[in-house]
Length: 278
Image (cartoon, rainbow, N blue to C red; front, top):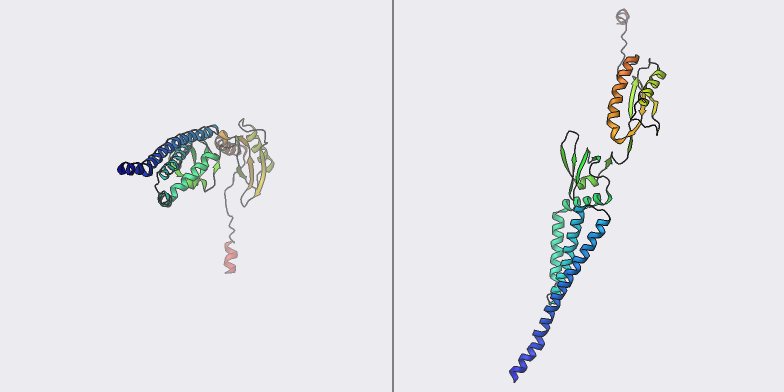
């Protein structure tokens, strides 16, 4: 009889409560995992509506699910009576150590997230990043890929990109071509100006609005300099620059206008005068 009472007391004191805790821990884990999956799906749908990059969506979804499942696991272990304080402290210390070890990588990752979210440039844009220019091939989480004009592939860490000046030459539909041409002081200034203006207006790629500018900008040491500033579509920038430079040289030669180069006049005294002075 006493043995039956001892077994019943042990069951009421230890077995049944522990079994109940196990059942609750399992329930917490199952429900928590379902909630984690549901919340992750909600986050993914919201990010897709914002048209965020698929790579970033996948990464954020993975991180969200991992963090939620970690909290669920801690809650389940706590229900079993396991002291999770030391576990949380251990995870915090491990996270700090990993963060310090991967400081540069985390910086590149944070910069990659900012580039993808704010989109200062996109794939296919011609840009200047971290002091180099090229066409954007890919924007990754940790680095971006550029293709240079001579078909080299440059892989640039996102931290170096976001921490510097970003020049996007493709961001606007039109660009201004800035050119400077010099003529000799002895040449006809008005004729040179009209010739430059006629060359610009004869090019169908030059836009009429804004109106091209041709004006004297500087009385330099060896030349009178004109600024020539037509507006063109961004895709026509380099062809117009190169073609105009060639046409100006050919037309100046045909019209007898000279493009001076830096020179210095040296005046020497006559020999007789020099001998007398000596």
